[in-house]
Image: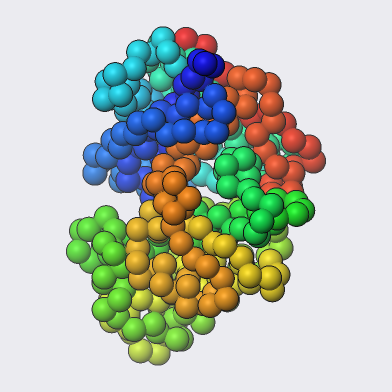
Length: 371
């Protein structure tokens, strides 16, 4: 019997609500063995959000948060190992996505760069495990967007020659991976996922997300607001493309709200933001072709039945379901992806897809911090 190849993936997304840590056996077909979630303290979450836009004293604030997050990523790893009863010496490597605090894809007026923090030196030192991190910048160095990177993992675990499939990841931002039965894998960020909905409900009730989409379901879509939001140039940009909280944030929403003749209720705004997410995802999928597709959703959005229903309503000829029906919990796919990307790097294999990011070539991603 072949020995397991154990890797850990660490993921904290645009929503910045928690660190997801996944223990994965990558000996053959990726197998999720254990998982752990470490919620961010409210103060840490606020610090992350404040660094996603320009502000005062950024370098000192970023440096301090980089250290704090490195310790938290290590803490999440050690808790995962303890829960699983696995020793650090059994782990080949950690793949740490880090926390994105700024993403400026090619064409940005502010320049082209991406920045993820959560010091991998500390992760390696505190866990005793070789750590792979800073995955996105090498793709950018090769002329790519630096995002999305998970489509290569989606292809590895979800592709089938029987059906065209689309994997939709709805985190803070949303992205799609198109897996045709025959042909090239493609993918891109469609726009906001949960980020605007989370921010809106938090400012009104203190909740960090709209559980089951219940508040959105209590409101009505405000047609004028939805139309205004959909005029953003990002939605008609051709792929490859990527985006983040720098573009879709409360200030962006407020500009459209300020232009309305009559102010919608708070619940109607929430309903409209959910419709914006569903519509931009559905529009992107519709542009892929007219053939019927299997659509599988992962990320936090997969747990929002209102959002899932709206996706099905907008894509009536396609099958919309959670990746759970394929045997993988939708919450853990991104963390698993970065465990897999770490294995790619350790084995000197490329992790990006040219057709997705627009890089001029496929490259080995990330830096390796040996234990």
